[in-house]
Length: 525
Image 1 (cartoon, rainbow, N blue to C red):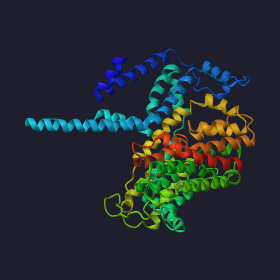
Image 2 (image 1 turned 90 degrees about the vertical axis):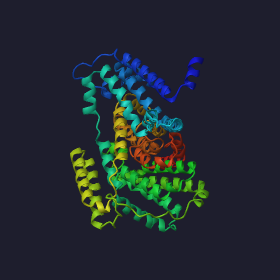
Image 3 (image 1 turned 60 degrees about the vertical axis):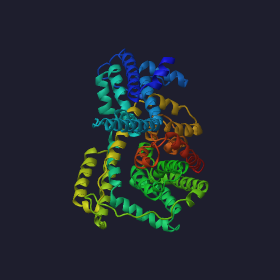
Image 4 (image 1 turned 90 degrees about the horizontal axis):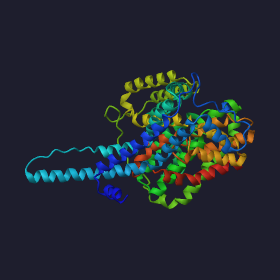
């Protein structure tokens, strides 16, 4: 053991990386060997099995049910182990990015040393300015790539354990990638210059009522922005709010504690801000039709309470950080905006803004009718329109939307295999424990998945239905995986945090607003 520790300390970064990959390869080999011990499912049998097909309705204890479900479908346990491996990976991403920066610095120092040696000897040495080790750790540190990375061992083990046919049936029939595709489209549309300019003008009018300073902008964006999610969908509201916060707040480089507090507040507010309607927030959309929840019902039982929670959370954080606001510049610098063609952007005609809003409305309608062809077709028309009006447009930035879509696609692939343990957990909780349990579970899975699984639990009372949805939206800001729009906000704001956004920092920043909005939804609902 001492030899291994000494060797690790003395090894060059490249060798350390090799040891790391070898350890990962060994772990994967062990996993594959264990997975190969299974057998393919009978022809026509699906995986995961229907929750009603386990035959455990008469079993009493939760542990007994979970043991039975693992015995019936052993791959359930493998899928959950890999899922929590991906969750743990997300908490370590900032560590990977930090080590990537360390490797880059070491690589640059070696290049400089080689250059000095070559110059002293009178010849030019070969220099490689790209560090493979640093690039690999940068990739491992990309939060948006985590669940996609862990999908690879999931599908390998799944094909070995339950068969290729069942694996393909799961991907092609039981998992839907409609939401990831919608998020890619709506993020690109929401980040366009006409939409951002319109939102900024509306926020500016509201901020002007408070003097137009940083405090007024901060309050306006964190109050009105999340509430827009009830009408233009939460991913669009997140994109707009995060982009405006980047311009009006984060560019001033606030202290880390203030930056994380604002980020947690944004994520929590967005999660509950979509509850004024029954069609915009994914966790509400999952239950609205089945439980008969109308817009009027949402306003009565969730909407006004959500507004009270958002305003209350904003007020508390303002009081806590009021001295920090005094240190922020009152006015931000102005720079000429460049259009996508490289020229100074011209004023935006009204009809261009109206067209962009029309494309957003089309995308929302296409998503409502579950039509990917209409959604993608409308986006292709938008790209053509963008090219025709390039002199008043920003360049279409697809890197962040595609990464976020990749993240969500990996998340839904993993999340679809977690119902075997989430459903019995939810079904055995009383009202308040159900509210708390739903909030906690949301931190480890998308809140829309939590509410969907709740619809499969028989004999839920009206108060229990309220508890599970209220808990799901309350916990939507605790982690990046808790709510579908969160990766969009992280992708936009990550550059303002050293080594990216720390999951622990986000969790600490979101706890206080989570408690405030949770109290509003529970006690006022």
